[in-house]
Length: 328
Image 1 (spheres, rainbow, N blue to C red):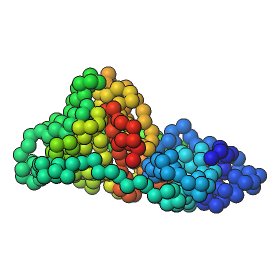
Image 2: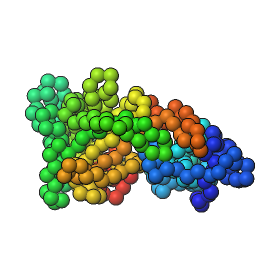
Image 3: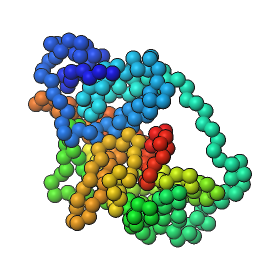
């Protein structure tokens, strides 16, 4: 695909955008570039675009590439578009994935006898465990209801206590950039809010499911966090599913005590490194719910961008193998 001129932000649908790309002289106003803070708008499209890019890279076809031709302009990449355009892009990405060659069947890499040797804990038996270990061939995570998540990687020199934290703030901005509310402090949640639901320890794989809610009462976020350690990998895989039912806010995850490049992600946008009160952490946006798009001097309502839906993110903590946790 080749880069195209940026279309008029007034375009409400993908069809209108395509006409403007073909003949920019028909635009109702001047072209407007996305703002510098727009990279975490419409997180769902970022994640779908990543999945489509993986499919195109491994089994793309001419028909799939043709379906996405011209859909790489700055506003689509940023997500600063109206609802009709965002819906059209969502459809185009799903259609392109359906036009790719069928995926090759995955080869079974687990000994059938492993199932018989896998121990599983749920209910009271799991609640009696004071702390729980999930270990890969490199990174190791220890979870407890008192201390949250401890990350240890001896090869990387990491011993990070309480290394995961979630941060929620009200968003008074537009799709072009997050704007905090003056004087409001971020709400911080620890994974210790979550409860162990299932623990499996097998000869080669360890897996922990944590479920519950980030935050209390009606302002909380239903959440499932799954940690998987494989003895043939150097990283711990982490899948995080958040069900967002709130508007005008930004929910981020903080990784504390980890060096640059240690946390890998699968299409998750808006990564940044933050210094706060002498501590350093890496953040990534999980949900940015914002229903306003600025077009010239007027504000356009974009209700779909409030992301009232479950969103799933995948991370790898440690040295990920090629084709591993973040390439699927």
